[in-house]
Image (cartoon, rainbow, N blue to C red; front, side, top):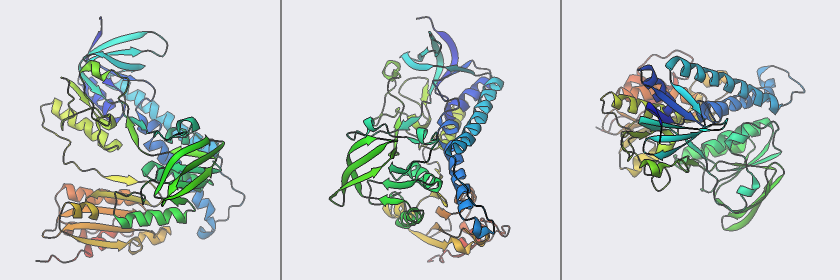
Length: 464
């Protein structure tokens, strides 16, 4: 077949893919990026940044609700979800324009359409205006991302549930939102919608939310959730669903061995992610998949097909934009003769509830499972004086220190500014600094970083 020739083709314009395209195009290679809908991928359009935009609007709503505490009287205020949505849309429009400018200045060609492999390193694109283009790349990069998982629960698909995509486009406050799943997406949106005025129920299969974290973290997040007025039903297995989201919905299942029925008006599904690897012709390209549908890659993000790479969510990388960006750096450096791998890299993360939970490195659960001896320091967030100026003293910080050395093994924080505070500790870990470097630093008063002096001053003495 006659195909247009490119030095590089990128299928999907997500975080890793777009940076690969911009880098290669600026280096003089003819580069094409095939995107079916979201310019720049999910992060600036329907995921990370839009959700944090909505969450901040919910935070502002709490300031109005508690304005008397700050000596401000504000009567008869209301939530206009259309205004919340429009603020988010304005941000997204700005970000899309930024991306389009990057395509222009880099020289990468953005091709809107539905792409699928028809033979090795050859992609057929169905154009939105009709017609097709066939493109062949000397190198091909798969960056198709992931989507919200819809579990095969009887009645779930027919209920037309919200995913995070639709939830971020609501122009009304749900009367009673049922959130199926107590993970990151579920918790963040549940808390935001509660602050907008929804009655909210979280339904979680595991015995505790964020079950992969230490028990004190789960307990703190569960207490926060209940203090916000959210009903939390952990240990609940949903067997079937009746009704239609936006009208009336009923979840039938069991909890602690007893039958349970949960009624609401709207249903949000947040039970995980499914890689976007179906229907794109991977088998025709010689690209294998894993048992859970991710593109099979090695530690250099190379697929089973020559000169084909996969990056980001679709490759099974941890589902964070900052990890996808690092996938780009792995590929970029290796294309230049480097030997960079994905194994052993740091994976920081932050849950954007209010307050936030952030972690880098090991937690106690992981250290115990791996038989790693450690010392622990833990302080209440109230010991960080900055929190008192903000009236936000909830939470704690804790750090794991190697038992026999002063090496920092991990850091967790549940409190205001946790994500920003974590970055300081992460830098120390990356530089191989002992915890004493932070303990003995002079941080500005009053800042959240100053709390690290208090935390690391609480590290027990080395047993030696």
